[in-house]
Image 1 (tube, rainbow, N blue to C red):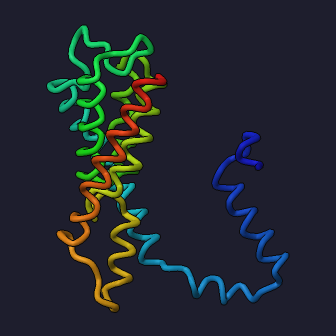
Image 2 (cartoon, helix red, strand yellow):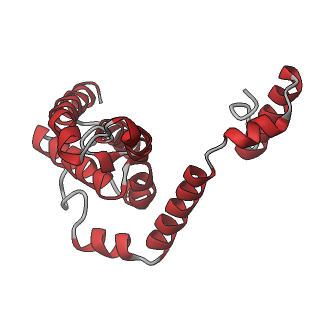
Image 3 (cartoon, rainbow, N blue to C red):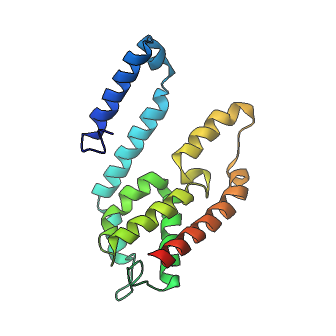
Length: 185
């Protein structure tokens, strides 16, 4: 609630943890022992690498050569661009989110969304497609990798096994999401 009211998100989270620790009156050593520090280190490293990648200028150079929207295209505009434009942009988001994982992809493409005819609709499209893109492959979401790694001891799940279900699921849900936004946008 405090974060919604404008408080700093990190301090709000820390304050919430402290309040929960005090209310539940548990020995804090039990809590710290249950934290998966490897996952936290993985996430920290991932976001450091992504930030370095963005700061390198590589995404900006790529999108300068291959813009998200061609000149004169009204894709993802409030006056409704063509279905092909919506699907093209959705496909770019789907593939991109699987190259670097869905959440880091948002950081990579953030600056490009401001150049689109209607950035609000572009953000909505990105939110829908990058969420569903997490289902496409194991690489689509870091959460997939964490679960697959944790499940390795009980048989695990391979990339192809995951993709058999993930690819059709992600393609269908993304197409429905893009269509929904195109109709309502």
